[in-house]
Length: 305
Image (cartoon, rainbow, N blue to C red; front, side):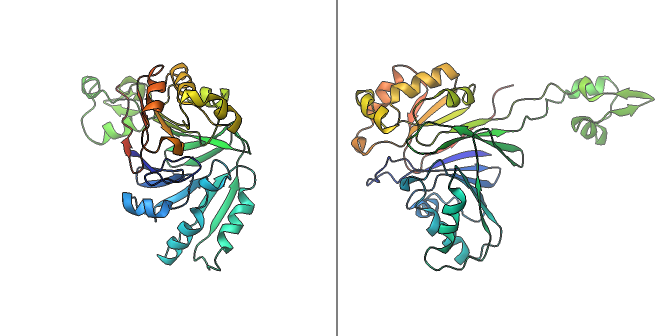
């Protein structure tokens, strides 16, 4: 399973139908939260994501609309009896902010909350995946993140194995795990019956940013690019001044990177009632694009072999 749930898709201001930024990824039952705007825990309840399987929070930057949901979330998990540690990752300042989150409201947390500061290029290793920090371009220190699934084993050629005399059963499993087997005095190597490793899935989350080279390179051949798409192209001057992106700019980046699907988020309150200007500008350049909505879910399938 690799499921993306958009908990908050609004820009700097919440609206009646968009919470501030928060995206949760369910990776094989483990929950990874990217940004945690105000009201995120309620959105998790509405989406029925659960909380206790949350292992990490990745903060893109410390503008309030991207982190104000953390104090309430960590306190709620404490009230619910959480014991497992939680790690908050982010750019410079993360350690200090984490200590502030822990003492806010005189709540005696019943589990450990750690703050870890990352720099562009740093890697966080998980089970069957890594998260790589990316340099982004915003008005304060900021990071984006690339969730990259580990390569999958190649496809097992059952017919080839049988043809080489390998009986179905435990020897099949050994070959699939990369170990040679012996059959009638003959050594069968895994590469004789197992294809080349297959790429895992890749999801990019940018947080707030201008289109930039680092995000472009990280997004090459990505399955999903979740990018700041705050404005329609007519707001290009303000997008540049505020260090955000227009839909057309992001679409051009997605096209150059060969992204499979583009999802625009951090939608300005200007488009509360109508996101068509954003969608129209992006589709002029890149067809496979959608504008995220709160509580929208996406399953990320494996690529065809």
